[in-house]
Image 1 (cartoon, rainbow, N blue to C red):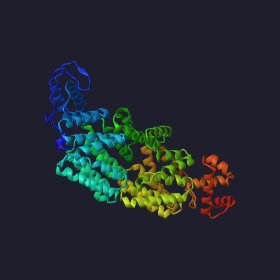
Image 2: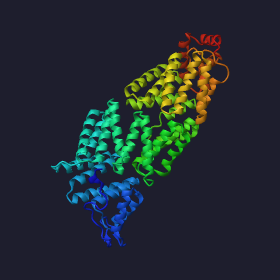
Image 3: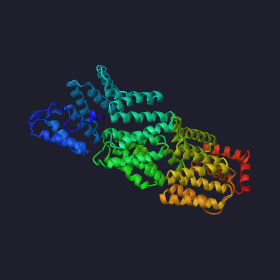
Image 4: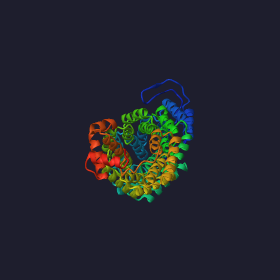
Length: 579
């Protein structure tokens, strides 16, 4: 908020309580004699020190003795917000709105209307939120002079344009709001508007310009220039945005700053849940999986009050599912994914990858196909495409995997993110190896490994290194393969990545396998069962896949081996030591 909105202790036109027994304006008789002036003073002091519980209690006590003035009602509202008491926050803001109207201050009344609408919008109450925004606009129509509140009431327009994909219009509206904030020296409005300008530019593909604006906003936060609510909003929005556009370095830096900010306010509830989720995400990336589980579990234990924490809870549970899956704790992972879904968080791609790990290939394929088909936006699809490629290769749909790899490569080229490039390179390496292009697989996989190393993501780096090892083996360099696979194995063992450890052990045990002629691991399994005389139905039962998937694998096997029958494939397998 602006300095005009910050209302320091002793400011403005607050009604001063007398301490006499009064009749509460909300219909509650107060028979206790309270030194309301002293309570109000202590409440203001605690607010200034960000001691939120004491601020809320003291201001509430003073309010029960004698109704607070508009400015102190705003202090009460903000204290309630920081404690996750959204209903109390909105109630106090509505009272402040009417109190400003009673003394003829349309601007501050409109500002309160905007904040009420903002909170209701985040709760999903679109109709009431729109109504409050409209009320604020109507109040300002009566005002002939320029005022800072006009800038705040431009922000819903910015959001509408952004949701509609009208990024240039969103940027223009945000620029107008930023100009108003600058004119009135309102740091809060300026920060919110510049943040939205940055988001719009990034979504337009003007990455460097947009991220520079986002960084400028964060400087205002870390310099302590913003009010508590706006600081929390900017922190959480910026970190989530950096994560969504795969700016993992920035997400890591700003999460560390958010953590310090939260630690300075141990009583704060409102933004702590999201802070813990962001911390858990960074810990997962960095390989501190048990710490990530602990951070994510704290959301449900301590921070469930308020709309922001309710949203964070679903994300926290999904994060637990991801870590459990990587650790091989599949039953607990499934419980977490189901709970995340119940809370409204899409459980993909994690649940599909869990099904793949459980050898339920058809279920995995159905789930990931559905998730990709209903996701249109490029960066959101990017989060699903690596899993989609892995699963399509497992069920023998090489063409779908190839097309998805190309799509991810195009997204990475447009976004110019190190993390997206690392994801794309690993996918390209996986597809190349599946198609028998060992040299192409080696080049792409090594690039992925180096990129993940640079991002300090040991698990992802180890997965890429497995591909490097397999490519070296396919090229006949068994010594290099052993070194690469051994290094990946050591990382998996250190992390506790049991499923990956089991998979990497398969190719590292015993003598080097024969040339696989471009067949995937699953296709080799199918071929060996065909050579053993198994029917399609028997193969499907043994591998826990459908008859349709077996047929698709056989089509791919026949094409790669240049044969046209089961008998010819069996003869080829024995002739080339594939069984």
